[in-house]
Image 1 (spheres, rainbow, N blue to C red):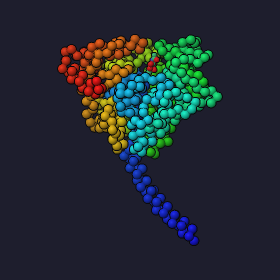
Image 2: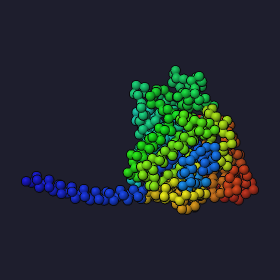
Image 3: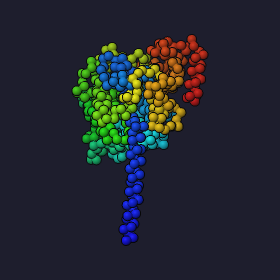
Image 4: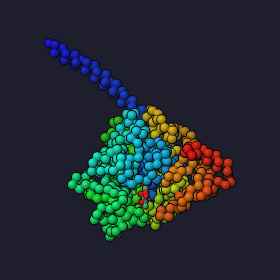
Amino acid sequence: KKITLFFLGVIAIALVFSGCAGKSGKVATEEAASAKPNIVVIYLDDLGYGDVGAYGATQIQTPNMDRLANEGVLFTDGHASSSTCTPSRYALLTGVYPWRNKDAKILPGTAPLIIDTAQQTIPKMLKEQGYYTGVVGKWHLGLGSGHVDWNQHVSPGPNEIGFDYSYIMAATQDRVPTVYLENGLVEGLDPNDPIEVSYSQNFEGEPTGKDNPELLTMRWEHGHNNSIVNGVPRIGFMKGGEKAKWSDVDMADHFLAKAQAYVKQHKNEPFFLYYALQQPHVPRTPHPRFVGKTDLGPRGDVIVEADWCIGEFIKTLEEEGILENTLIVFSSDNGPVLNDGYYDDAVERNGDHTPAGPLRGGKYSLFEAGTRVPFITYWKGKIEPGTSDALVCQMDLLASLARLAGTTVDNTDSEELLDVLMGTSKEGRSSLVLEATSRTAYREGNWLMIPPYNGPAVISSVNIETGNLPEFQLYNLSDDLGQQNNQATENPEKLQEMLDAYKAIIGA
Ligand code: NG6
Ligand code: CA
């Protein structure tokens, strides 16, 4: 009898609780779903300011990027923090200036993770606000904490800095290991064929690009002459892991499929996706169905391929009925380069295409084309189409997305510019320190100051101006976007004002 009464009591209590939980749970989800849109950052690798139709390209057709621009806000003055990959990605995810971290520079595939696992990041912040968070694509922020054994679970990595899900290539397409990692595990690894990676010496008996040109389907021009994978010579040496190696020509489709699957799986909860495409970084390996889509050779063709991927990805959001509830931020990690180390006709077939648009410099450069990149925000039905000349930096996404998700972050480098990203305000940043291969420059208003730097004025291997000059440079971008007229000597007051403000920020 006692037992029956006890059970009745338990059932009664359970009913009361399930009733409450059911009701408030549902309301909470509905509120979250309408208040917290999905957030997708589509990030390209080395895509230049002038490589997109909406930004003036005529020889590369980019209808899907153009759709985002035409139906969203096209920023004319949007910046990566840096003119190379690792620092820009560091700033994007952490909201911290990359020059504050001495390790935030182009990393080998064996480098340890450079984001502190205690650090604030976009995925961590969003996760705290109830988001499911994922990264698909290029990582290049280091993995592990010293020596990485690629045959074991690799950690710390994206999953330790806030991503619930990660499907990545460790570094770049031109660096070993040339395998994908899903949540820290090399996909498709055969334990009987373990992976070994070294950036200092080759493994005995393994061919290299340098010694075995007869094995190459793509020739190296500078660097890129170590291990050969799929006929392409890479940076770094790798042995084993045959079955796990990626197929270069399928990489775009492969990442797209992962990004689409992620969306389908998480469409019923607010999600964040950092979709980091590999194009048009070297080696440029378009899938055969994109070969010849432009007259520019592989560099143009992989941009068309990336554009197609973006179109397919948007279609998935549409088909799943969540496009209206998804904010898309589109950008690139640094400016363009034609010859980045392989003979792939990028220079020879460039014709009169201007990858940097009207800007001076390119990847690796302190000049404008290093960091000023395509930058678009799109949110169907929420963002009014338009153009914005506001100064914005990818580093500002942390604070801005925090506001969108209903929270704030304790971060002084990341500026909260949500209204600017939404197109309702044109009040962007008043200043920004830009970085290129560990050098910095200072932007305030329309003025740009580059302090004196020794070193070559041009990186001859890639044929890009560095921005180095032994004296100060001062440009007024409002009437000299191409940075042709150095006003440092004729405008000493402005120079001094800029120098003082710059020193105050960098702590010099
Ligand atoms: C450089 C590579 C270049 C590219 C770059 C990183 C050589 C000679 N050049 O060192 O090809 O991989 O690093 O690019 O090795 S980034 O977009 O990831 O920053
Ligand atoms: Ca890059």
